[in-house]
Length: 394
Image 1 (cartoon, one colour):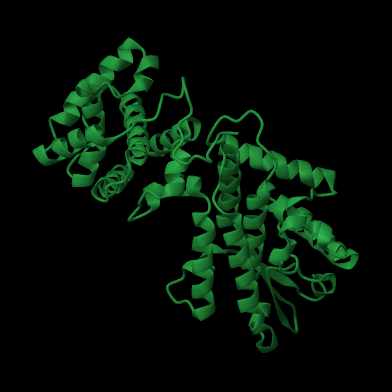
Image 2 (cartoon, helix red, strand yellow; image 1 turned 30 degrees about the vertical axis):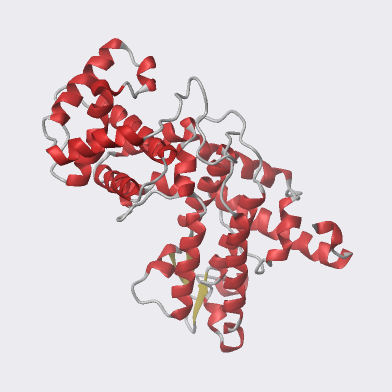
């Protein structure tokens, strides 16, 4: 805890926190220009987690940005202030962003890369998994903004010289007297993600890519929302913990339907098939099945009356869609149907019949067998489901 630190260390950590929270994190979240400070050591985490920006406007912008992004996924009354795990991921993201600085390529500074990346990895490990609805939403908001980061690079030419400033503002003397000195400035935006997704990565950047993947994995809600763009998508324990919360499950399903089911149906179907094949516990299967039922219901009710049945040519997409007719076909499995108007129930029934006509015997049998094994969570109107005993909504 910070109480064991000497005054000098606390003062240094206070300066680092101010530069990080006011200069980098608050602008990052609110869409401003984020200015990195020095690399942040892991042993500063406890101090950071117990602090708030002394700049009240920056603090307000920070919280409002978290709340705004979280509200795009789920309706939240009061979002908690960023917790220790969110601070840890923010610090790690800051450190990884600093590793894209070309000035660190200088021979006498290059050795610091391994140290800074090691600090980032320690912070990612310290973050742990999100334990509440609020933590899941906070992490999603942070990771979403981090993945959208861009570095602003400048090339400035005058009658005598060419200057390059990577991720930095040009000094005033370089751009002074633009007409007299024939100053021309070119500004480009380079997505930070390009530094860790390029097909030609050196050893340092390969390590950075691995660290960024580990950071993103600490936000299972983000992974679920982006599963349509994720080949080889698979359910993980943290993802299923997120989906055990009815509010978050509804938010993910609504996002997937709003953006178009597309390849997501086949990817979710493949993930369900794998869960079934490995003998996942009934509660985990139930959470995944409830998610699929809700998503399929939304998609069925969202379609135009002129639209036909979904494309079930892909075997995994067939399994995804097979869940709904099986649930409607005597399983009495859909508690959410209690709040579906009779007219919509009829539409769901018609959709289920159209889907069932496209199912092969193996897929229909697998869907039927699935419902013999699952332990479906209670409806959101009556209780909050929980896969992990520590998971509770906030």
